[in-house]
Image 1 (cartoon, rainbow, N blue to C red):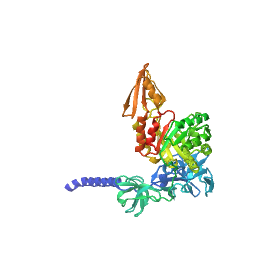
Image 2 (cartoon, one colour):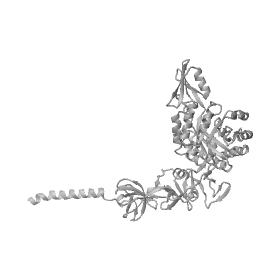
Image 3 (cartoon, rainbow, N blue to C red):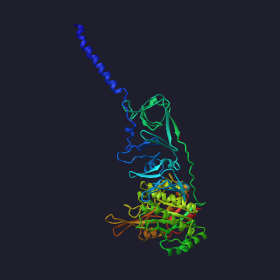
Image 4 (cartoon, rainbow, N blue to C red):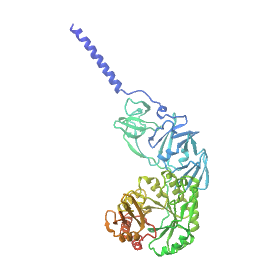
Length: 565
């Protein structure tokens, strides 16, 4: 009886142990379920090609164009993908169906659906179409791209996937200590993507602790246990193309540039009086060119005699081109349209050669972010043409902000000779609060931020010869008027303003009350200018520039000569 009494509990215990063992096996034993690479990459057609670039793979959303495409025996990459992840220098004009690419010395032009292209004026041929359009997307042949973008690639099939590595990519690699399975996610229950063998070398993309995400040589991205990985090391993808050598034309001394606002042909006749009132200036930049239409034409106020007179005084002339005041011109359309951009460049170069100027100064302001590609391509193309004709190219820029990043100062510096940082309009007509046009800390921070991408010997500090008188009404309304140095001082003094030095702003500040309104001014004078010149000198910049002639206190010129020699 006692034996029978323990039989049932014993059986129940055995069953529980078996169930527990089964549960543990089910929970912790590796899964043998597999996932096909076709299900992983999800090609939407037999010609779709997944793209893995420098270890990065971004799944394509359903209904969106594939990042890669197979056409014949060639791999084509979607152009926006190539720009975002490998080389941003490709600029496509959808209106004209034209691709542009500028190197350090050449301009390449590729029409869509063509197997020929031009390098400057020389026509070259390619075995297949270089640029194709499909599913409302533009694709470029990877074999052609290799001529200009330093990369290597390996194509795998079933399904198509291409593994691209760009020169300079530093990857973490390791050899496998033992064979195993590459799984979709970290964990033994995740589905198996492929089998890997001992000794296989993989790129380690990310470490998850006990698992790592890796890339195999045949283009499979998955996870493997870290205990199967050998010692990791760093490898840098070697360059195969020659390093580019961007050439710059320079003035063999510090730049002392003054902008001369010229609004009519007759205004050029004022040059003798302008020259008699300045000293220490070695570059004049007259505002001669303004965009006049969407086809790239310009209003041209240039003068051959003006240039000749400046050259007699050993002063260079950098003619300025601007879109300010071009009310009926769509600057974005001009810059993004290849034919209009070509017309603008050719018009500027033709006029510059005719008048024998020394350079061109670009001042295109208030651009839309949509002009991003067209603007920088304009700078590249104009720089190449300028250098072919011995012309210096300078480009005016805002102090760096998140909203002006698309001006791409670092890329400008590769092609243009000088960048001028317009260190003024900290507070401008339309600002929500009164304030300085150029407080000293704001200027210094602007220099520091600009130097993060621009060499000091290419950066010129733009400084104001003007300030603003701010008027705050009883109702809180705010207006301002721009005034020259002495005009602003005289205005404040004549109204009994108390003027005191502000260490915080690096300027004299004055205010007064009149007719229920408050008048304020952060004065620009020789004392505030000297702080800016000192900041220029401390940062070893290429020189200074001043906006604009006619608004300065004449005493500034002796100060400028002390700092810029």
